[in-house]
Amino acid sequence: MSKKGNNAAGVLAGLLAGAAAGVVLGMLYAPEEGKETRKKIKTKANDLKDQAVDQYGKVTEKAKEQFQDVSGKVKDQYGNISSQVKETADKVVSSVKEGYDKYKDQAIAKTTEVVKDVENELDGLKS
Image 1 (cartoon, helix red, strand yellow):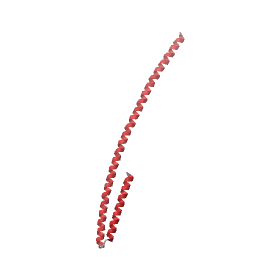
Image 2 (cartoon, one colour):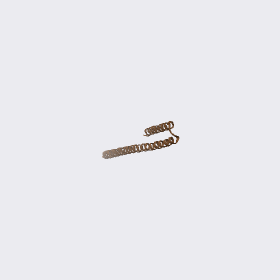
Image 3 (cartoon, helix red, strand yellow):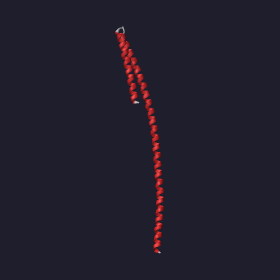
Image 4 (cartoon, one colour):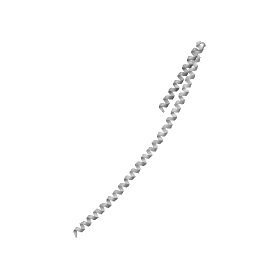
């Protein structure tokens, strides 16, 4: 947006400056009295100033709209990414808990088997 906005503002400024220069030169070379020429230059300068203010307002409004549009999209994407990260983290935590519970139960079962085997061997040695 900034490059596009800068280009548009530059083109607009160039057009306005060119128009102003053309008007001034045209009036200076026109066969009229100096007082009348100055009055026309002042009127044209005011008209050009009003046009520049209007164009500035339009460009500013367009920039605001584009900023709001981009800002909204960024907020939406942030929300989507945030949700995805949370979901993924929840899945990882759940998977780790399941794995821990599974291996804990297996370890307890194996330990119980080893204890029984040791007891059986000890009982066999006593007899």
